[in-house]
Length: 237
Image (cartoon, rainbow, N blue to C red; front, side, top):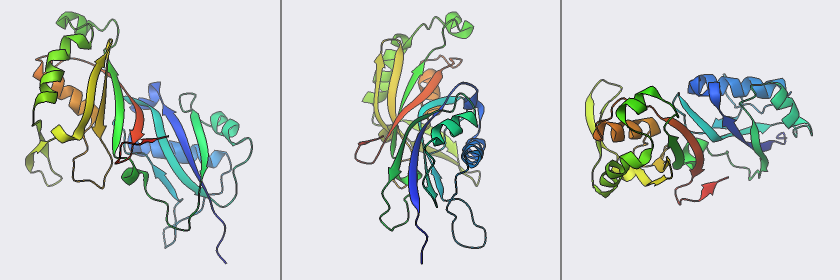
């Protein structure tokens, strides 16, 4: 008889010093933090059994997040004090914003990397940054022309190297869903995840492209991922 399983989804923050973690280090941190709470993970089948767990699309280093999702499967319900145990076992900049139990329809739980197709970001220019003062860039209003020109174009080619070392020109224009300047900040929605013909577009690479186009190559940005959307642009809570 199959063991009953329980499916959960966590929405987490990745703030401050955690932005320096690689995606692999982030995954290890989450696994260790969950294990310290006493979670009884359900394991995959096969010779090398691993916990049934799925993570949001990889976040490049130097980028913070308020919406990292983790889906995992357990063999028993979570304790009533699970959130307290989790927060006591990990960094103060890794907080649970939301937790919900997912329905078990008997099928394999889909990967978050395929469910999430778009992500919303916010970028700002660090206050008092010496480089930005030298360049005369005080907020994104100074980059408005470059942003509007980018969005009105049919193409946005960036040179990339494949794993085989072959250089290719990739058009990322359709990987930008929206971009707008709000006050001194810049918010934009980019393609992420897998399972699509559109290439995923990293937030730091998009901003680097804009900075180079504006001839401000040395600009430094604070970037934060705010939310995810599925292929129909429905926000994933």
